[in-house]
Image (cartoon, rainbow, N blue to C red; front, side, top):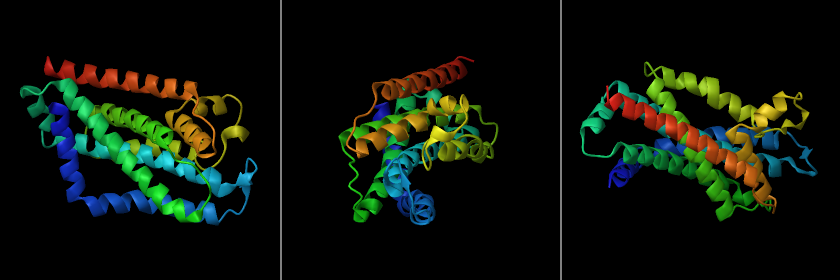
Amino acid sequence: MGIITVLWEKWTEFKRDFYKITLAAMISPLMYLIIFGMGIQTTSHGEPYLNYLIPGIVAMSSMTGSFSAVAQNMSVQRLYEKALDQVMVSPTPLWQFIVGQIIGGSLRGMYSSCIIILLTMPIHTGLIFNLKSFAILFLNGTVFSTIALVLSFLAKSYADAPKYNAYIITPMSFLCNTFFSTDQMPLGFRQVIALLPLSQCSTMVRSIAGGGEASYFGVALLLVYLLIFSTISFLFIYKKKNL
């Protein structure tokens, strides 16, 4: 019941800010598509560059949408509205509150990705987005929702949320196999970048879009990230409850 309550809150927020959320999900990816996709007339891995770029932007949108949906709201609720303290003294099981936040954030990321898929459909690239793609995007969204939860718990002020975007989300957006292949990166650095969650998500979505399959290693790695950051979230909130 607690999970449904949190999701209902997210749904109410989504309906209230529908136009703002939709525009925010569209503007940056569209700019990237116009600047990189139409400005760079080249090929990548033997295919038109757009075929490489679009899956990367779809994966990136699931990251940014999920992270933003949780990080800013949770920071405000914890630091100013004291909503987290109210949840702790309520009968709602804390694990349900956390799971609801993670699912809600991931669904927001999925919405952002679906907008990009719909906007690029008239281009007729022949890319495939199916249930496997959406499962990977949802999993990626849960990972970044848990990362956002952990960072929002660590935030000392509301101003910390934009800093996390600058330190984490922006570098990953440009480095993690989104716009350009990591094949030409220096040895060692390339392997580290490949292990980041967005790199795995971009690679798997791109593989499925080209008619291939997602890698078991990529799915397993995303699940490991999800387990680690979920555990940290649970430990933080239960420790705070017992203070």
